[in-house]
Image (cartoon, rainbow, N blue to C red):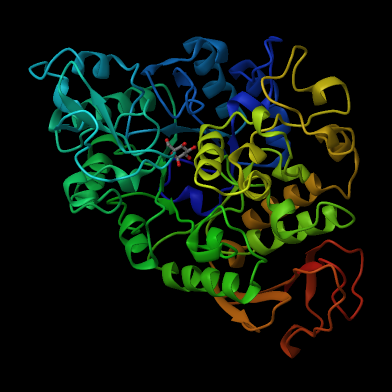
Length: 537
Ligand code: GLC
């Protein structure tokens, strides 16, 4: 793939590595850069084009690295800057780009800028953060932090509150200060010079916050700042940029991902991720309404076709495992993992695979004390204190905790799933004896090899990368079916989202169409449990 050309990512598939949980090369129980380098051949075999690397920077790890204390240094347990340079060049040698996760909305409170800021109101770094005068016990307003509690933290020495949208240890940067913006652009150029070929921009829709108006996402300067960021830091042709934008709707996504390249290549939006949530509360899951999910995907597919670009994902480090959520962890684990992959990889956009998804890893259930995630722990504490029963809160945790995604990668059926020779930093899912990469590589019918084939198909067929989208049977509660088309090629994708056999017949024009991929060895005339197929005309 020629990555010097703008838009190379239109046929690319990106793989997310959560470094702490991917592979430990030195026996300290934590994944590290050496571990990733050692698995590059595995990733090359899968056929991915880029690695989105969750943060590896120096950090006190209050939020697993999303609290950065030095943007230009590697967290020592992950390795050194030399290791990072080696990862970039070894990946590139295999045609894999490194896409760094950039947290530009906030730093850690351990960052030098924040420590300087604490020294006094006259310190030049003070205005790098968002402060309001106040007295103890009366924060400037009632805004809440995403991880619980007030969004304001009092600093007695200054007689001021600082603003934090996430944890107390993650003070928000003040993007209205031009020096902050310049520092960040400069730092990004540092990584581009090292050979990094893209960036995932953490909560980018929050940078233009206006706390006095209680605005976090979509502040009035948001797109002005993103354009300035893009012009100053992403000038390099061929860089791929993906902004995390929880607040985006289709209209706004056109602006973010406009093909003129003024802003970003694409965004992560999460509307589909709420298709099974009660009242938009991600902690209250209901049964998935397939018509609702299909409607959302259709709106995004059609909305951005020709005028923007979608990212495609079921999973990341903040979400539960898709097989456990919309598939079947038990008898049909393999079929349902492949079906979900088909449903997503037939769409237009850039697919993202989260580590372990390609072998069909599942959620985990632990006693509350064993959860590591700050969001999960705070949520449990807050909801139980508010009078909810611990059992009910645990049901939410099992279904939704971010730690479902963060258990160590399951490489082998050996001790600790082959993830570490030491004591793993976080519980390994006990099902590793059955679900692991070694077994998947050996089995030609595994979820892994299915993903590998899906990735190859996107490169081969114009219709998968560029085709338009027509949803079939929108009201059907069991089947997700759609047609993609470019002149001369038509693709039908059919997915049974249930463990039942469903009567369904393809539109006549597809009679006699060629199967590109399917999770059952031959056609039956009905759709068997979790059956999926892509057919080409
Ligand atoms: C994003 C990250 C998440 C992190 C948060 C704060 O949502 O994906 O893991 O906790 O931002 O940086």
